Length: 197
Image 1 (spheres, rainbow, N blue to C red):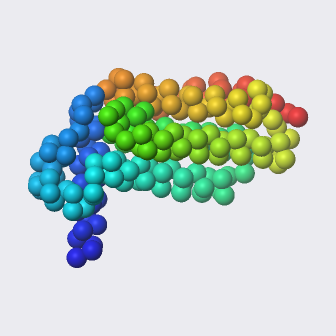
Image 2 (image 1 turned 180 degrees about the vertical axis):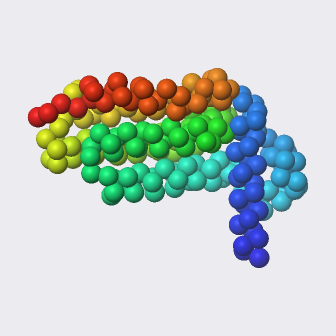
């Protein structure tokens, strides 16, 4: 029974992500979501006590997807510039593949929802920025490199690139992928990002 319940939860979250993608700018109602899943609104609420909890389920999926892979990058890659590129590329790639999730990442889909959800998205980006800072701090110790503009401003600059590309994707109604032109942009950026100590 619990397996069937978890399948239904997954189905609801997938339908919600699909609706976020297919209806840019539209507010998602539980009635429309129930219709998409093919269940009653009451059935939705048996799996999630509120729409906020459904959004939270998607945010948890984003966090798990990104941070488990970021952890692996940090464990397996020792070169600092490669680490930074891989982390930023991971976030941009995940965003490209999950357009509906980008409406959550930009908080576009959270208008009128609980403040807690927006805080959770802000926290997710803070964690990415913290991870970038950590990688750059280690650059000095391991490779004698330091960011050209200091650790905090550099990490913030990279985060602004990530957020800007995701926002552009949402604004273009998912026509301009966050990964578009990224390899050329990174090549130019990498040349000026770090200095030898």
